[in-house]
Image (cartoon, rainbow, N blue to C red; front, side):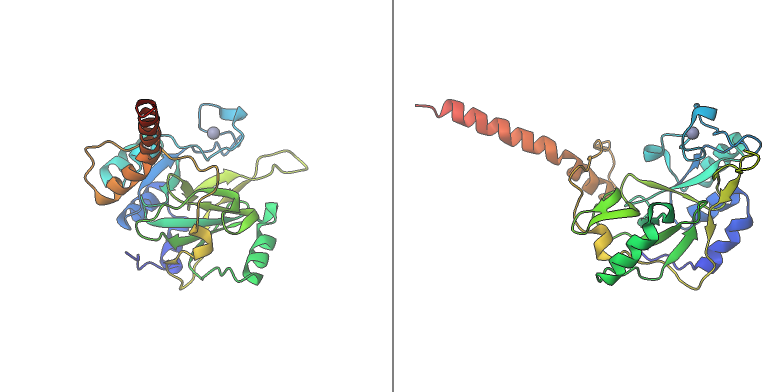
Length: 263
Ligand SMILES: [Zn+2]
């Protein structure tokens, strides 16, 4: 179901604290979870790796695939525990969101131009600037379809340097999260960038077909969800998760047949 929220409305969250933003996302039906904060004095990550962490401010603090939630009380508990935690949103069927991540540092802007020239449109939609000057384009996930997470290539499209897609079992960091950028070249002091919504009239548009068509060759299917889940969406996911098992069963059945039908 389309969420009638515009970039202009979300941009209010750019200047709010992470808990207020988390509650606002939850109210839109987007499951949220806390992500490691960064130390603004050192730039170190709040995860266990601390200074050794290669992606400060990007690591979920909880088992998000199971625990991302729209429950306000849980969100208050989490941000009471970690008041500066960054904010993550689960993508794919969990939230109904597909995010196209364009990173100009890896030529994502050039890839976008090439894709557009080839007829692959980027419909105007809710958009955020990333901490490194890239873009996150938020789209509505197609209903009842799995959307693969991809990095630098897309089935049916080919190589997409600097353009990734976040779908099922993926997540995205959102405003007002803060992450380090490159240190000051003169002093070596840490510098930071913020995720911010672009204040526009655009609301969520349907995901363009090129971003959700097909599956990458190396897609990993997640473990099946508990069988006591009766949510129809969850059931669908469970069926997909079981597909490889069924194939193995068929193979072994065939083997049995061959064995017992030998003359
Ligand atoms: Zn970390």
